[in-house]
Image (tube, rainbow, N blue to C red):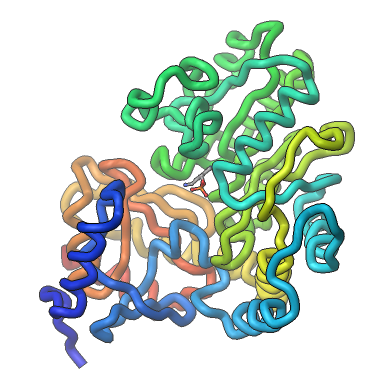
Length: 391
Ligand code: PMP
């Protein structure tokens, strides 16, 4: 059935009106009210279907409302939703063990979002090294709270909020020597996204992170990988660090960790750990969030979603590289973390996608981000490519 994606019903309009009246208008929202989802598809309140290439921004890796996840959340919610971290719970201990297994790190700390994970990583680096400064890279995105914002590159995000925790200390991406040249006796850590997400899906050269690791070791500086966006199969490995064969001292996680349930965490190697009382979060590692994350990790394993991300990513990128759409330059990425570079602004493609049943967004003005659930099918990929081709 041909669906009309161009108009909005009065039901949708009344929700837009409430939002504009009562919600602080910080988001540039698409005019669509999403109501339900299954796998890689979402539906709006008017019953229209969309292939979701946004996935909550690399969150819904196992697909929307996976029955195994839904059931695990339901079961845990009936037993215990929240208790203080003054007590032990089984889901938290189990998840800690699972995360140590999948990350190859030694210990974890639980929080509730990506930016909180970055804050925790910053505090941990300062506490461990007794040094204060951080080196971040150009076009980085690490979050919007004051500490994480200090390490986030875009001036429009930073300018209204100065003074930040530290003033600009950004070096060019993919330039290890620039990091070496910027280290001072006060440098606590270097932070990088193994593949930059918000900065435009930028993949560094294969040796970059190895060189950065070496420079950090030589200077007794910690290395933080921000895997908030690249984690949990997004790039075709459990974590993107595996693709580059480099181990950080601290890594941040969030987004896909709970299959859509809000959660964040850091993992660190032995010797890099908070002392009692140095950090805490009321909701960090709640039984409900941990049950969701355990279920999500199970699904990734059981359904071989790591391999699937790799294979579908290759297929998707292959198909996208044949695009003849106006202004198309190239396709970048790993697994299902994909950026399509244009030589012009690509906001009209987002609009075109929505009007043709495909949700997309831009990570920078000229890069279209494609980050669907890892369960996306070839048929759905073909649908997305043909919509872009018509644009
Ligand atoms: N780090 C990276 C690499 C991210 O992509 C993001 C979110 N886009 C964040 C941190 C911040 O995560 P959150 O929005 O959950 O605070």
